[in-house]
Image 1 (cartoon, rainbow, N blue to C red):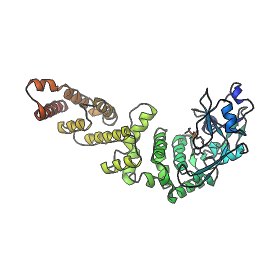
Image 2: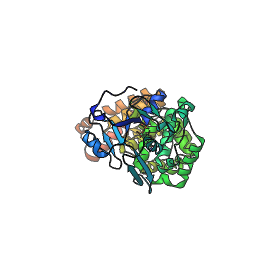
Image 3: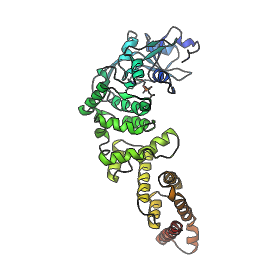
Image 4: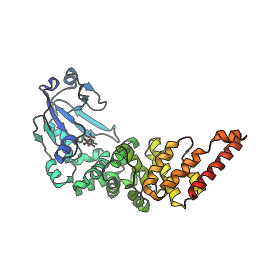
Length: 375
Ligand SMILES: Nc1ccn([C@@H]2O[C@H](COP(=O)(O)OP(=O)(O)OP(=O)(O)O)[C@@H](O)[C@H]2O)c(=O)n1
Protein backbone atom coordinates (compact mmCIF):
# COMPACT_ATOMS: atom_id res chain seq x y z
CA UNK A 1 0.00 0.00 0.00
CA UNK A 2 1.48 3.30 -1.08
CA UNK A 3 1.38 6.41 1.01
CA UNK A 4 -1.00 8.99 -0.38
CA UNK A 5 0.47 12.03 -2.13
CA UNK A 6 0.85 14.99 0.16
CA UNK A 7 -2.78 16.01 0.40
CA UNK A 8 -3.27 19.41 2.08
CA UNK A 9 -6.67 18.30 3.36
CA UNK A 10 -4.98 15.58 5.39
CA UNK A 11 -2.14 17.71 6.75
CA UNK A 12 -1.93 17.31 10.52
CA UNK A 13 -4.88 14.90 10.55
CA UNK A 14 -4.47 11.59 12.39
CA UNK A 15 -5.71 9.19 9.70
CA UNK A 16 -5.58 5.38 9.39
CA UNK A 17 -6.65 2.98 6.70
CA UNK A 18 -8.99 0.40 8.28
CA UNK A 19 -11.22 -2.58 7.64
CA UNK A 20 -11.47 -4.49 4.39
CA UNK A 21 -8.65 -2.67 2.57
CA UNK A 22 -6.03 -3.54 5.20
CA UNK A 23 -7.34 -7.10 5.53
CA UNK A 24 -7.38 -7.76 1.79
CA UNK A 25 -3.94 -6.23 1.20
CA UNK A 26 -2.51 -8.54 3.92
CA UNK A 27 -4.32 -11.50 2.34
CA UNK A 28 -3.18 -10.67 -1.18
CA UNK A 29 -6.84 -10.28 -2.20
CA UNK A 30 -7.82 -7.46 -4.58
CA UNK A 31 -8.51 -4.25 -2.67
CA UNK A 32 -11.68 -2.60 -3.96
CA UNK A 33 -11.96 0.52 -1.87
CA UNK A 34 -10.27 2.22 1.04
CA UNK A 35 -11.96 3.19 4.29
CA UNK A 36 -10.27 5.59 6.67
CA UNK A 37 -10.72 6.41 10.32
CA UNK A 38 -9.84 9.84 11.68
CA UNK A 39 -8.75 10.17 15.31
CA UNK A 40 -8.88 13.37 17.33
CA UNK A 41 -10.98 15.51 14.96
CA UNK A 42 -14.44 17.03 15.12
CA UNK A 43 -17.09 17.17 12.37
CA UNK A 44 -16.34 20.87 12.10
CA UNK A 45 -12.63 20.20 11.46
CA UNK A 46 -13.64 17.86 8.65
CA UNK A 47 -16.06 20.29 7.02
CA UNK A 48 -13.49 23.08 7.16
CA UNK A 49 -11.08 20.82 5.26
CA UNK A 50 -13.66 20.36 2.54
CA UNK A 51 -14.88 16.85 3.41
CA UNK A 52 -18.55 16.20 2.63
CA UNK A 53 -20.67 14.82 5.46
CA UNK A 54 -22.64 11.71 4.39
CA UNK A 55 -23.45 9.77 7.54
CA UNK A 56 -26.92 10.19 8.94
CA UNK A 57 -26.27 7.93 11.90
CA UNK A 58 -22.50 8.22 12.22
CA UNK A 59 -20.03 11.04 11.53
CA UNK A 60 -18.74 9.87 8.14
CA UNK A 61 -17.32 12.13 5.44
CA UNK A 62 -16.36 11.75 1.80
CA UNK A 63 -13.10 13.05 0.46
CA UNK A 64 -14.17 15.61 -2.18
CA UNK A 65 -11.73 14.21 -4.79
CA UNK A 66 -11.15 10.51 -4.11
CA UNK A 67 -14.72 10.00 -2.74
CA UNK A 68 -13.19 7.64 -0.15
CA UNK A 69 -14.88 7.38 3.24
CA UNK A 70 -13.36 9.05 6.27
CA UNK A 71 -15.16 8.17 9.52
CA UNK A 72 -14.47 9.85 12.84
CA UNK A 73 -13.33 7.31 15.44
CA UNK A 74 -16.38 6.21 17.41
CA UNK A 75 -17.65 3.77 19.95
CA UNK A 76 -21.05 2.12 19.72
CA UNK A 77 -23.41 0.60 22.24
CA UNK A 78 -26.57 -1.27 21.59
CA UNK A 79 -29.63 0.41 22.99
CA UNK A 80 -32.49 -1.40 21.26
CA UNK A 81 -33.37 -3.72 18.43
CA UNK A 82 -32.39 -3.39 14.81
CA UNK A 83 -30.27 -0.97 12.86
CA UNK A 84 -31.39 2.19 14.64
CA UNK A 85 -30.84 0.69 18.07
CA UNK A 86 -27.31 2.03 18.53
CA UNK A 87 -25.88 4.75 20.69
CA UNK A 88 -22.95 6.21 18.80
CA UNK A 89 -20.28 8.17 20.60
CA UNK A 90 -17.87 10.03 18.36
CA UNK A 91 -15.61 12.62 19.86
CA UNK A 92 -11.96 13.65 19.54
CA UNK A 93 -11.14 11.65 22.68
CA UNK A 94 -12.13 8.27 21.17
CA UNK A 95 -8.88 6.38 20.55
CA UNK A 96 -7.97 4.23 17.55
CA UNK A 97 -8.00 1.13 19.78
CA UNK A 98 -11.52 1.97 21.02
CA UNK A 99 -12.72 2.32 17.44
CA UNK A 100 -11.15 -1.03 16.50
CA UNK A 101 -12.76 -2.70 19.53
CA UNK A 102 -16.31 -2.03 18.23
CA UNK A 103 -15.63 -3.95 15.00
CA UNK A 104 -16.84 -7.41 14.03
CA UNK A 105 -13.87 -9.67 13.25
CA UNK A 106 -10.22 -9.46 14.27
CA UNK A 107 -9.14 -9.52 10.61
CA UNK A 108 -11.32 -6.43 10.09
CA UNK A 109 -9.93 -4.64 13.12
CA UNK A 110 -6.43 -3.80 11.88
CA UNK A 111 -5.48 -0.17 11.17
CA UNK A 112 -2.60 1.09 9.06
CA UNK A 113 -1.04 4.51 9.37
CA UNK A 114 -0.17 6.45 6.24
CA UNK A 115 3.44 5.49 6.85
CA UNK A 116 2.42 1.85 6.66
CA UNK A 117 2.64 0.98 10.36
CA UNK A 118 0.00 -1.49 11.57
CA UNK A 119 -2.06 -1.19 14.75
CA UNK A 120 -3.47 -4.60 15.53
CA UNK A 121 -4.65 -4.84 19.14
CA UNK A 122 -6.66 -8.07 18.63
CA UNK A 123 -4.01 -10.00 16.68
CA UNK A 124 -5.85 -9.92 13.37
CA UNK A 125 -2.55 -10.72 11.66
CA UNK A 126 -2.26 -13.90 13.73
CA UNK A 127 -5.78 -14.86 12.67
CA UNK A 128 -4.95 -14.11 9.03
CA UNK A 129 -2.01 -16.50 9.38
CA UNK A 130 -4.15 -19.09 11.12
CA UNK A 131 -6.95 -18.53 8.61
CA UNK A 132 -9.52 -17.82 11.34
CA UNK A 133 -12.62 -15.66 11.32
CA UNK A 134 -12.78 -14.67 14.95
CA UNK A 135 -14.94 -12.05 16.68
CA UNK A 136 -13.22 -9.12 18.37
CA UNK A 137 -15.36 -8.99 21.51
CA UNK A 138 -18.81 -9.91 22.84
CA UNK A 139 -20.00 -6.70 21.14
CA UNK A 140 -20.09 -8.84 17.98
CA UNK A 141 -23.65 -9.80 18.94
CA UNK A 142 -24.78 -6.20 19.11
CA UNK A 143 -25.23 -6.19 15.33
CA UNK A 144 -26.97 -9.39 14.18
CA UNK A 145 -26.00 -8.65 10.57
CA UNK A 146 -22.52 -9.79 11.60
CA UNK A 147 -23.77 -13.38 11.63
CA UNK A 148 -24.47 -13.03 7.91
CA UNK A 149 -21.27 -11.08 7.27
CA UNK A 150 -19.15 -13.79 8.88
CA UNK A 151 -20.84 -16.47 6.75
CA UNK A 152 -20.21 -14.26 3.70
CA UNK A 153 -16.52 -13.84 4.53
CA UNK A 154 -16.28 -17.61 4.81
CA UNK A 155 -17.87 -17.95 1.36
CA UNK A 156 -15.19 -15.59 0.09
CA UNK A 157 -12.10 -16.92 1.85
CA UNK A 158 -12.73 -20.62 2.51
CA UNK A 159 -10.67 -21.57 -0.53
CA UNK A 160 -7.76 -19.83 1.20
CA UNK A 161 -8.28 -22.24 4.10
CA UNK A 162 -10.35 -20.00 6.40
CA UNK A 163 -12.71 -21.41 9.02
CA UNK A 164 -14.89 -19.79 11.67
CA UNK A 165 -13.39 -19.91 15.18
CA UNK A 166 -15.30 -22.25 17.47
CA UNK A 167 -16.26 -19.51 19.94
CA UNK A 168 -17.40 -17.25 17.13
CA UNK A 169 -19.64 -19.95 15.69
CA UNK A 170 -21.09 -20.48 19.17
CA UNK A 171 -21.75 -16.73 19.42
CA UNK A 172 -23.38 -16.70 15.96
CA UNK A 173 -25.62 -19.54 17.10
CA UNK A 174 -26.51 -17.67 20.25
CA UNK A 175 -27.50 -14.58 18.22
CA UNK A 176 -29.63 -16.72 15.88
CA UNK A 177 -31.42 -18.47 18.74
CA UNK A 178 -31.98 -15.19 20.62
CA UNK A 179 -34.43 -13.96 17.98
CA UNK A 180 -32.30 -10.88 17.19
CA UNK A 181 -31.92 -11.86 13.52
CA UNK A 182 -35.63 -11.31 13.06
CA UNK A 183 -35.13 -7.61 13.73
CA UNK A 184 -32.92 -7.19 10.66
CA UNK A 185 -34.49 -5.36 7.74
CA UNK A 186 -35.18 -7.71 4.81
CA UNK A 187 -33.29 -5.34 2.50
CA UNK A 188 -30.09 -5.70 4.55
CA UNK A 189 -30.46 -9.47 4.59
CA UNK A 190 -30.82 -9.47 0.81
CA UNK A 191 -27.86 -7.13 0.23
CA UNK A 192 -25.64 -9.41 2.31
CA UNK A 193 -27.00 -12.53 0.60
CA UNK A 194 -26.61 -11.03 -2.86
CA UNK A 195 -22.96 -10.26 -2.07
CA UNK A 196 -22.45 -13.79 -0.72
CA UNK A 197 -23.96 -15.24 -3.90
CA UNK A 198 -21.24 -13.44 -5.86
CA UNK A 199 -18.41 -14.98 -3.79
CA UNK A 200 -16.23 -17.90 -4.92
CA UNK A 201 -18.04 -20.46 -2.69
CA UNK A 202 -21.66 -19.28 -2.34
CA UNK A 203 -22.81 -22.68 -1.01
CA UNK A 204 -20.59 -22.14 2.05
CA UNK A 205 -22.61 -19.05 3.02
CA UNK A 206 -25.74 -21.15 3.36
CA UNK A 207 -24.08 -24.12 5.07
CA UNK A 208 -22.42 -21.77 7.58
CA UNK A 209 -25.80 -20.17 8.27
CA UNK A 210 -27.32 -23.60 8.71
CA UNK A 211 -24.60 -24.59 11.18
CA UNK A 212 -25.38 -21.60 13.38
CA UNK A 213 -29.17 -21.94 13.16
CA UNK A 214 -29.58 -18.72 11.14
CA UNK A 215 -30.87 -20.39 7.99
CA UNK A 216 -34.10 -21.41 9.72
CA UNK A 217 -34.82 -17.77 10.60
CA UNK A 218 -34.74 -16.15 7.16
CA UNK A 219 -34.72 -19.16 4.83
CA UNK A 220 -36.85 -21.85 6.53
CA UNK A 221 -37.86 -23.16 3.09
CA UNK A 222 -34.24 -24.12 2.45
CA UNK A 223 -33.96 -27.32 4.45
CA UNK A 224 -33.44 -31.02 3.94
CA UNK A 225 -33.46 -32.22 0.34
CA UNK A 226 -34.51 -28.85 -1.06
CA UNK A 227 -31.39 -27.28 0.43
CA UNK A 228 -29.16 -30.08 -0.77
CA UNK A 229 -30.49 -29.87 -4.32
CA UNK A 230 -30.45 -26.07 -4.30
CA UNK A 231 -26.81 -25.96 -3.20
CA UNK A 232 -25.84 -28.46 -5.88
CA UNK A 233 -27.63 -26.33 -8.50
CA UNK A 234 -25.56 -23.27 -7.55
CA UNK A 235 -22.68 -24.64 -9.54
CA UNK A 236 -24.52 -24.29 -12.86
CA UNK A 237 -25.00 -20.66 -13.75
CA UNK A 238 -24.60 -18.79 -17.02
CA UNK A 239 -21.68 -16.37 -17.19
CA UNK A 240 -22.17 -12.63 -16.76
CA UNK A 241 -21.34 -9.72 -14.49
CA UNK A 242 -20.84 -10.48 -10.78
CA UNK A 243 -24.35 -9.23 -10.13
CA UNK A 244 -25.89 -11.26 -12.95
CA UNK A 245 -24.12 -14.39 -11.69
CA UNK A 246 -25.39 -13.71 -8.14
CA UNK A 247 -28.95 -13.48 -9.47
CA UNK A 248 -28.62 -16.66 -11.51
CA UNK A 249 -27.28 -18.43 -8.46
CA UNK A 250 -30.26 -17.30 -6.44
CA UNK A 251 -32.61 -18.56 -9.15
CA UNK A 252 -30.82 -21.90 -9.27
CA UNK A 253 -30.76 -22.19 -5.47
CA UNK A 254 -34.53 -21.91 -5.19
CA UNK A 255 -35.33 -23.91 -8.32
CA UNK A 256 -36.04 -27.16 -6.40
CA UNK A 257 -38.57 -25.43 -4.10
CA UNK A 258 -42.35 -25.58 -4.54
CA UNK A 259 -43.97 -22.49 -6.05
CA UNK A 260 -45.40 -21.54 -2.66
CA UNK A 261 -42.06 -21.82 -0.89
CA UNK A 262 -40.27 -19.87 -3.62
CA UNK A 263 -42.83 -17.06 -3.45
CA UNK A 264 -42.80 -17.03 0.36
CA UNK A 265 -39.03 -16.49 0.26
CA UNK A 266 -39.36 -13.73 -2.33
CA UNK A 267 -41.86 -11.90 -0.13
CA UNK A 268 -39.88 -12.37 3.10
CA UNK A 269 -36.63 -11.14 1.52
CA UNK A 270 -38.47 -8.34 -0.34
CA UNK A 271 -36.61 -9.44 -3.44
CA UNK A 272 -36.26 -6.99 -6.32
CA UNK A 273 -38.85 -7.92 -8.98
CA UNK A 274 -36.26 -8.85 -11.56
CA UNK A 275 -34.67 -11.41 -9.23
CA UNK A 276 -38.00 -12.97 -8.20
CA UNK A 277 -38.96 -13.14 -11.88
CA UNK A 278 -35.69 -14.79 -12.90
CA UNK A 279 -36.26 -17.37 -10.15
CA UNK A 280 -39.77 -18.09 -11.52
CA UNK A 281 -38.52 -18.42 -15.07
CA UNK A 282 -35.64 -20.65 -14.02
CA UNK A 283 -38.04 -22.96 -12.20
CA UNK A 284 -40.20 -23.11 -15.36
CA UNK A 285 -37.15 -24.12 -17.38
CA UNK A 286 -36.28 -26.86 -14.90
CA UNK A 287 -39.89 -28.09 -15.09
CA UNK A 288 -39.87 -28.07 -18.90
CA UNK A 289 -36.55 -29.93 -19.10
CA UNK A 290 -37.69 -32.38 -16.42
CA UNK A 291 -40.54 -33.63 -18.60
CA UNK A 292 -40.22 -35.40 -21.92
CA UNK A 293 -39.72 -32.59 -24.43
CA UNK A 294 -42.86 -32.17 -26.54
CA UNK A 295 -44.64 -29.42 -28.47
CA UNK A 296 -47.35 -28.56 -25.92
CA UNK A 297 -44.79 -28.51 -23.08
CA UNK A 298 -42.46 -26.17 -24.97
CA UNK A 299 -45.33 -23.93 -26.09
CA UNK A 300 -46.49 -23.68 -22.49
CA UNK A 301 -42.92 -22.80 -21.42
CA UNK A 302 -42.74 -20.03 -24.07
CA UNK A 303 -46.13 -18.67 -23.05
CA UNK A 304 -45.23 -18.60 -19.39
CA UNK A 305 -42.02 -16.73 -20.30
CA UNK A 306 -44.20 -14.11 -22.00
CA UNK A 307 -42.07 -14.92 -25.05
CA UNK A 308 -43.91 -12.83 -27.65
CA UNK A 309 -43.83 -9.62 -25.66
CA UNK A 310 -40.48 -10.20 -23.92
CA UNK A 311 -38.24 -12.26 -26.20
CA UNK A 312 -35.18 -11.44 -24.07
CA UNK A 313 -36.67 -13.62 -21.33
CA UNK A 314 -36.49 -16.60 -23.69
CA UNK A 315 -32.92 -15.79 -24.72
CA UNK A 316 -31.98 -15.60 -21.04
CA UNK A 317 -33.43 -19.04 -20.31
CA UNK A 318 -31.86 -20.50 -23.44
CA UNK A 319 -28.48 -19.58 -21.92
CA UNK A 320 -29.43 -21.73 -18.93
CA UNK A 321 -30.62 -24.56 -21.19
CA UNK A 322 -27.20 -24.51 -22.86
CA UNK A 323 -25.69 -25.35 -19.46
CA UNK A 324 -28.30 -27.70 -18.04
CA UNK A 325 -29.30 -29.66 -21.13
CA UNK A 326 -26.96 -28.86 -24.04
CA UNK A 327 -28.48 -31.79 -25.96
CA UNK A 328 -31.78 -29.88 -26.19
CA UNK A 329 -30.40 -26.44 -26.87
CA UNK A 330 -30.50 -26.53 -30.68
CA UNK A 331 -33.96 -28.08 -30.70
CA UNK A 332 -35.38 -25.43 -28.39
CA UNK A 333 -33.70 -22.63 -30.34
CA UNK A 334 -35.35 -23.98 -33.51
CA UNK A 335 -38.75 -24.22 -31.81
CA UNK A 336 -38.47 -20.64 -30.58
CA UNK A 337 -37.40 -19.34 -34.02
CA UNK A 338 -40.24 -21.25 -35.68
CA UNK A 339 -42.82 -19.87 -33.26
CA UNK A 340 -41.52 -16.33 -33.88
CA UNK A 341 -42.19 -16.71 -37.62
CA UNK A 342 -45.93 -17.14 -37.05
CA UNK A 343 -47.14 -13.62 -37.81
CA UNK A 344 -50.40 -12.14 -36.58
CA UNK A 345 -50.53 -10.07 -39.81
CA UNK A 346 -50.86 -13.08 -42.08
CA UNK A 347 -53.63 -14.48 -39.87
CA UNK A 348 -55.44 -11.12 -39.91
CA UNK A 349 -55.14 -11.17 -43.71
CA UNK A 350 -56.86 -14.55 -43.59
CA UNK A 351 -59.78 -12.90 -41.79
CA UNK A 352 -59.10 -13.79 -38.16
CA UNK A 353 -59.86 -11.17 -35.52
CA UNK A 354 -60.55 -10.80 -31.79
CA UNK A 355 -60.59 -13.99 -29.73
CA UNK A 356 -60.46 -16.10 -32.89
CA UNK A 357 -57.18 -14.43 -33.81
CA UNK A 358 -55.75 -15.30 -30.40
CA UNK A 359 -56.84 -18.91 -30.78
CA UNK A 360 -55.43 -19.20 -34.32
CA UNK A 361 -52.09 -17.68 -33.24
CA UNK A 362 -51.78 -20.17 -30.43
CA UNK A 363 -52.65 -23.07 -32.71
CA UNK A 364 -50.19 -22.05 -35.43
CA UNK A 365 -47.43 -21.45 -32.91
CA UNK A 366 -48.17 -24.83 -31.33
CA UNK A 367 -47.88 -26.54 -34.72
CA UNK A 368 -44.64 -24.72 -35.55
CA UNK A 369 -43.15 -25.64 -32.18
CA UNK A 370 -44.23 -29.28 -32.42
CA UNK A 371 -42.76 -29.59 -35.90
CA UNK A 372 -39.45 -28.08 -34.78
CA UNK A 373 -39.31 -30.30 -31.69
CA UNK A 374 -39.92 -33.53 -33.57
CA UNK A 375 -37.72 -32.55 -36.55
N1 LIG B 1 -21.74 -4.81 10.66
C1 LIG B 1 -20.51 -4.35 10.54
C2 LIG B 1 -20.10 -3.71 9.34
C3 LIG B 1 -18.80 -3.23 9.26
N2 LIG B 1 -17.95 -3.37 10.29
C4 LIG B 1 -16.57 -2.81 10.23
O1 LIG B 1 -16.48 -1.85 9.18
C5 LIG B 1 -15.51 -2.23 8.21
C6 LIG B 1 -15.95 -1.85 6.80
O2 LIG B 1 -17.15 -2.50 6.50
P1 LIG B 1 -17.62 -2.85 5.02
O3 LIG B 1 -17.13 -1.80 4.10
O4 LIG B 1 -19.05 -3.17 5.09
O5 LIG B 1 -16.93 -4.24 4.72
P2 LIG B 1 -15.46 -4.66 4.44
O6 LIG B 1 -14.91 -5.31 5.68
O7 LIG B 1 -14.67 -3.53 3.88
O8 LIG B 1 -15.63 -5.85 3.43
P3 LIG B 1 -16.00 -5.86 1.87
O9 LIG B 1 -14.76 -6.39 1.24
O10 LIG B 1 -17.12 -6.83 1.82
O11 LIG B 1 -16.38 -4.48 1.48
C7 LIG B 1 -15.33 -3.73 8.41
O12 LIG B 1 -14.08 -4.19 7.98
C8 LIG B 1 -15.49 -3.85 9.93
O13 LIG B 1 -14.34 -3.44 10.58
C9 LIG B 1 -18.36 -3.99 11.47
O14 LIG B 1 -17.57 -4.13 12.40
N3 LIG B 1 -19.64 -4.48 11.57
